[in-house]
Image: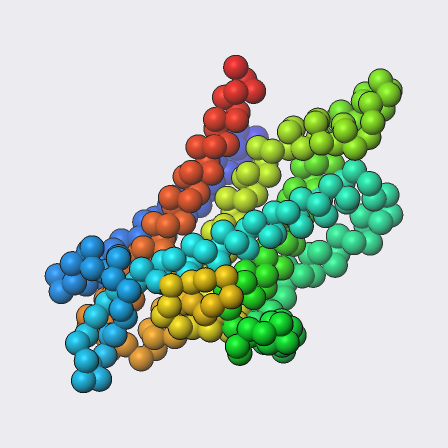
Length: 292
């Protein structure tokens, strides 16, 4: 009876894995199928490196160039990851190595609560609070790349803090008692033992977080300015996800505009894949060094 249940459970898990894989394959196939007609009208080089996006004929030549959107997506995501990583690692070190168990039990629910707030609420707070701060600082309208990156970093913090603090807590319980017994300074032990022991899982957390950052739409759209400009720190910009969300509802099905938006989505998917692959290779290299 036990073997039969084990076999049925194995078959069930295999079916779930197959469903997940086929679902992903279908999504990729659908996006590629809808994106390819774009390149019968627009050259891939013009699409990727062109800076003019004019999908509707308003008396000007129609053009589909998404370079500014690509630069906006990459810039806001990487800047947000940089801010979130610095703040998140600091918070994770505090929660795992400094705070008491009682303090952790009190703080963790609030961290998890931040993860459950809808992105549109973050965007509304960004408009009401963050953009006003930038306007007072002299930024016209307040909308800029830095404001979007700060808001996106706040959205990434709950995941990074939770995952990194759990990893560091395990490393602390494994190594810090021995370091304390040897008289090693606590902060030196954290910097030289706990953080290096946790870096593989920290990189894995960053892989998952960068996918969230690249695909975030509503909050970034509400504070970044939605202007087809090459992004600068205090200038407006627009991400690929934002342009898709803004224009997909008005694009005529089967038109070049419609297929170009799918092509932009395909580029976004490839960007996430390339960034994730780069971080995974770095993680494997670190693992290889440690095993070697």
